[in-house]
Image 1 (cartoon, rainbow, N blue to C red):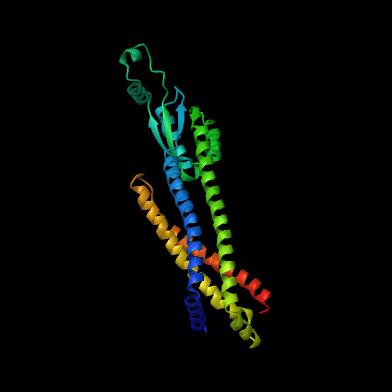
Image 2 (image 1 turned 90 degrees about the vertical axis):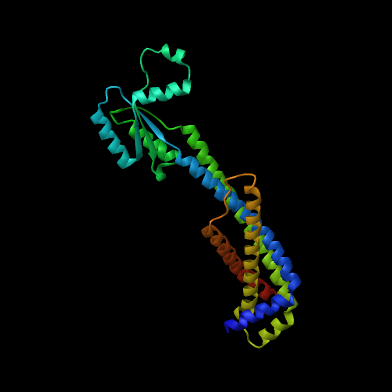
Length: 285
């Protein structure tokens, strides 16, 4: 029985090559647009993750804190929040001196005013504004800590940029899904219309709507599969063209590519089932 469905789908595809080619062209264009947004979203996430990995929280310590207190605090921070790196007052002054680069200016400073600090590379789950803000409020309560800095405005902008990229990808996905449904509906309608005598004959012989619709659904899925593969090929060609001028632009990993194709096929199956139900009812099948 399954072989019959695939054979009928292939026969319909060959008999209506022009219509199938138009559908494939339209779906390839729509899916390529979705693929471009997906590629942009993936690379934006990669860039934001790299930037996010460099986010750190700086804990400025009180002057009277002993070495033992620093060790205790370091272990506590490591267990709860991330990987701390101790920067002594002397090391902080050395770094500041290199940044200033003017020995005469530095000579006017009698004593080292810089405090010792802990630079904390936070755990991945804490690399967002809400978590960092909560962590800062907790850490500043420790008796060894004088002040906490983590660049709140900078972190907020990064989170907003990440959220914006995700919303853009979702919006593009919805628009492409609607375009795919529109193309499939009209393609299937024209295909069924072209085979209306056969459909009416099968209905009179007692064939169910599901039996009649399955070959058309398989044809729609096969066309969508070909369109998705072509769309990924176009996106890959675009990525290769861009990477020659803009280094660091990556193509989608295989997991994302498979998910892209799988989502397109699932949408095609659901959309064609819905469309064929309406089409066959309108034809009186």
